[in-house]
Every structure is written in C-alpha cells, then in structure tokens.
Image (cartoon, rainbow, N blue to C red):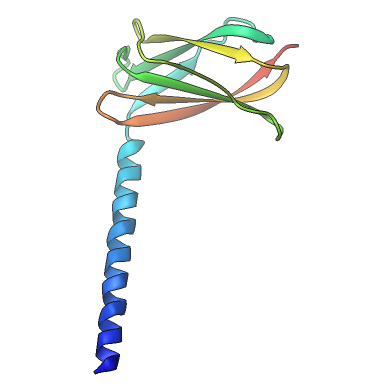
Length: 132
C-alpha cells in the first residue's frame, strides 16, 4: 500500500511540474511575438554625454507604430560598468525620442525593447561605438 501512495505522489508532482513548464513556455512565446521592425537612427554622431536616441518602430506592413513603450539599456562591452537606461512611452510617425547618457567612450551594446499596449514585446540589439 505504501508503494502505491508514494508512486501516486510522485506522479502528481511530475504532472504539476509539466503543467508549470508548459505554461512558462507559452507565456515566453507570447511575450516575444510582436512582429515589428526596430531601427536606430545612426545619422547623429555618438559622443560621450547627454543625447537623444531616435528609435524607429514599424509593424510587419511597414506602417509606423506610435503607441508602444520603448526601453533602452546600454551596456559597455566589458564587465564592471553600470548600465545606462532610457525610456519613452509615445512616438510620432513611428519615431521615439529617448533621452540617454553615454557615460564614457568605447564599445557599447544597446538593447531596445518595444512593448505594445496589448503586452506583446520584442527587442533588438545594436552595437555602438561612442567617441570620447
């Protein structure tokens, strides 16, 4: 009798674990399902100090997206530096102006995360060289 109780508990634990893992997988797929094009306007020179990044967001048909939230994280390519952060919640004709600070010159990894009002999101990485 003890063996059957132990086997039943094990089966119940395994069933719960499978359900939890399946739920995590589904929410991760939904979170990154936004079909968007993200570009960084690089026409301005990247130099140390305060700046305004221009992020352009378009949908799958090439139409501008104005109602997204943009979060930018800037990390130096080497360890030990605190990341720089910027965000904005409204765009005009698909262009978002994000206040940002380049704290020092060098190679940066810029991650732009776009979140739509319905919760779908996507992100893109840009490698940027900042002049001293």
